[in-house]
Length: 181
Image (cartoon, rainbow, N blue to C red; front, side, top):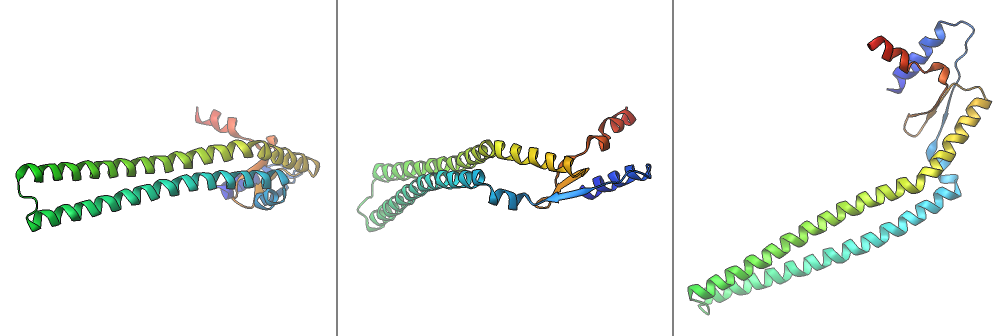
């Protein structure tokens, strides 16, 4: 996508022999690693992740414990039936009901844990986005100011190839829309 955009921008400059296109790039990873605000956000996010991971671990331990209890009771029930300690239909039915209830409880706990993990992941992504928004705006503003002062037409991010700044003079969005209508 980036190469198509750059090629389009280069074609635009080809029509004006006096125009000179200047490109620049930044490495957003390097910038973020150097900013104290970003470091503070990372530390805060690590703290939140640890809290959630501790809760997840606790829930996983509870699930493992209940699964072990179920396994033990199931084996015990099988042994009682095989040894003849339990022979009546009503006792066997009661055991089957108990095992079914325990199995349902395990299934519900497992589903609840998966739902919690998904919710936590979404919550952390939203929190990270919210915390980084002012930092990214600050970086973008600085990139724009530096680009304008250096008369750079386009600035790309080395980390992901995205366009961070584009001179409005080269924006052909509405020309393309007009052509499509």
